Amino acid sequence: MSRVRVLVGTRKGAFVLTSDGKRARWDVSGPHFAGWELYHLKGSPADPNRVYASQTSGWFGQVIQRSDDGGNTWHQPGTAPGEPTKTPDGMPMGESNKFTYDTSPETGRPLTTHQWYDGTQHPWEFKRVWHLEPSLTDPDLVYAGVEDAALFRTADGGRTWQELPALRGHASGPKWQPGAGGMCLHTIVLDPADPGRLFIAISAAGAFRSDDAGTTWRPINRGLESQGIPDPDAEVGHCVHRIAMHPSRPNVLFMQKHWDVMRSDDGGESWHEVSGNLPSDFGFPIQVHAHEPDTVYVVPIKSDSEHYPPEGKLRVYRSRTGGNEWQALTKGLPQRDCYVNVLRDAMSADALDPCGVYFGTTGGQVYGSADAGDSWAPIVRDLPPVLSVEVQTLP
Amino acid sequence: MIRVVLPHHLRALAHVAGEVQIDVRGPATLRSVLDALEASYPVLRGTIRDHVTHERRAFLRFFACERDFSHESPDTALPESVAAGAEPFLVVGAMAGG
Picture 1 (tube, rainbow over the protein chains, first blue to last red):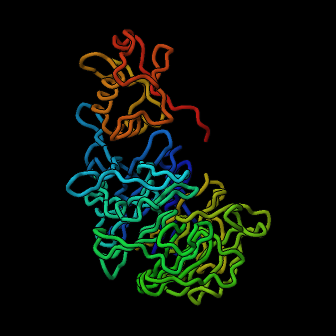
Picture 2 (picture 1 turned 90 degrees about the vertical axis):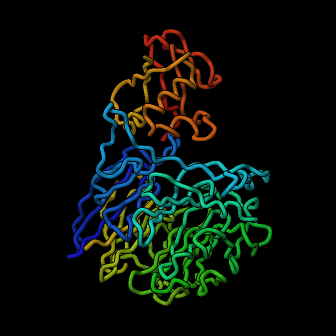
Picture 3 (picture 1 turned 180 degrees about the vertical axis):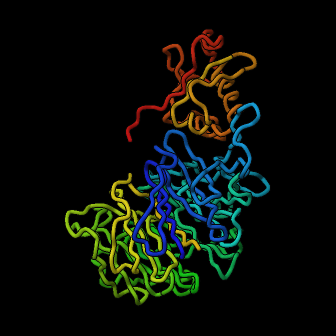
């Protein structure tokens, strides 16, 4: 019978939740990296035992961790799997936390600037890795989206990281500016039909696409409208929160924006709004059903200034029509006095049948549904605030 | 031999318990001690000082002999008792909530 493994990143460590295909009973391991912020963990589609984790701290900076046994044990990828983590003299070998912007004459550019909160230009400063996106085919190839916004790549299993500098060097870069959460590259979507095509999203710059594996980029924000910027349909400046794709239909993208749920049917060339009957079109995560490309999930929250569910009712909304018509899913979710949020990387779906859907809250609950959202139950209730939820479907 | 006291999370990263002892060639300064520390424990690169600028991370402090060296020049000499191993050099996580 198939199994599922849910990788949970929190403000104070990582947790691994495992269950069989029934998804009724769960084993919980953790906290891993106790006391650190785990912005994101994600497994390799090509090797489910290979899991990468972004371990970060305002005090101590960035560390990348890697597991080769499904999250049971971890090492910093500067140390090869199976090798001792110390030298014969007892010195640690691991060195896996170096993210430096590419300013080399050959490939990089002078350290560029972006717009700061006060309107002045400000140099890029690395802060943390928000999102890790392993290649669909190569366990050693991983993309990392970082704050201040840039895209990095490793081809050696996380041992070393190199920036893909053309994105940061895009002509619009000086116009990018931080959102309230920082200027972060938080979304990386890989096209399974075209290895050269990548989609990324930055708060608050917008969405970008590369068709040549990151060598060149262009903004794909036509159709987005954002209050709060002088030109509401500007090329950049949009606060995209999350983009989702179904692998069978890579030209169809769904987006949760600061306000508005959007859809593109042409690989991001243009967008149209599909918020429909949602009680609020503000939110962070968006997720597509594993087997139904037109079934989409969002978790509306009240507004940009009140990051909690409308009316204190935690409701996942599901559209089975690719947007516009949304149904509230409430069975098993608190329907009073609930004021948690669900962050952008904190929702995921497994590939079982029926499809399982999972999300984590800032209140420390991880909810799971084994019936595509019809009913929900908490897997754990009292974790630290949840930053990310990813699920792996295992044989 | 210079004794260095690291905060909990850095001891965990470096797989060490208690104080770290390192050899420093030449005068014991903030720079030479941190260079030697990072050479012995590469995993600590970037966790105390910025990878590129080598500036102290904002929420860390450097103490020795009841003095705060956090804002001193990297080439400031540390007290003789630190250089001699009688007193430790302390890397401290600043008090900052959370």
